[in-house]
Length: 541
Image (cartoon, rainbow, N blue to C red; front, side):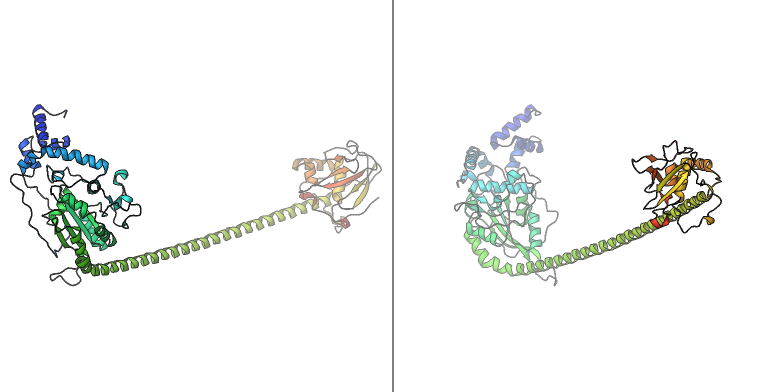
């Protein structure tokens, strides 16, 4: 309205005065399409120009078996004048429809209640589902009935998120419904082409309902036929797919042209049937128009019920049963193949996992064997190295016993308790050092089977001829107690005499007649392990 000029606003007001209450945006769009010519817009809205029907892009071939062609009702030449005279009735009809819909009261069958000011020119929506759902909602408002689909899907609250349903079935009457509640058929909320596709794919019978709100019989057909409990029960029990609409909507109008509908209300039954008229053997079945019922007398509930029970179902059911049996066999074979493929994949997966596990176990076993071999080799090398070190250490003991031990002289008489129960006694001159005492105690670790005359005359490593040189050698190699492999301490009270280079016995606090205990250092290989008691001389003077 804001962007309209004076002449455009005047044309809009003039057309609205003729049409009555309408959507302003829709009226503006119609005027724009005819360059704001009120006369052309009026002719377009009141069907003075025949509507152009676009041929469908792809049509499923159909064969007409039974045709009940009633003469179509030609439009009278004075329809334009009648539409102008009925403008006040449109206003009253709109108010009453609104009141009845709010109060959920069925709209009474009055001539002016079904009068409409235009035909097949509603604003089309690309969403056919929303159009069908809106039409079903209007049926509920006009008839006071409840669609069986509303018990599970509410088109208003869900916003039409769910896709068209072809497998949702209901019992009649629904468990949640009132005993006096009327029920509408379970209308499919997809496109007409989808209905044909479902018939061909699932072998179901389709019931197509087309109405025109301009006809006087429209309201009575909706309240009596579409809500008839026996008719609705037959549709539900036999798994009919029901689709319908008002021909004012484009989808329903296109369907009416394909079904050659001329009189309303219109009911057609379609189903998959074998080809006829000299079709080659083995030809695929085709969706066929089984029957058409046009006009109020041909589309009453009693006529449709009798037609379904006595003609259509007995004639069509055997072929559809065979067709569904074939579909079930195919579906069963497909499930069997899927189960076999699934079992094959599962077996292959288990075999692959078993192979991978065996490979992993073999690798782990190889790694374990390799580590075990490395541990054994390392232990052997450690053992050989310890033996080598022990051999060198034993050579030192023998060398010290042969070359470095001082002759026994008067001075300090000390008793040394060896590991185990061995005990030796020896006298050291006052000038003797702690190294002489340690060398004497170390020589006691030589096995008794080793003879003194077999002792080496030269040190295993380097040239050592006396005690001072031995002190220098030990200091250059490692800590003293680690080289000796043991420590000396008094028995009681315990006083440890740790080795020091060039330390005399008197400086260490040793007294004549002292009892000294030889203590092996744990983990030190220099002591050459434990020595049994019989390897030592018990006592020497």
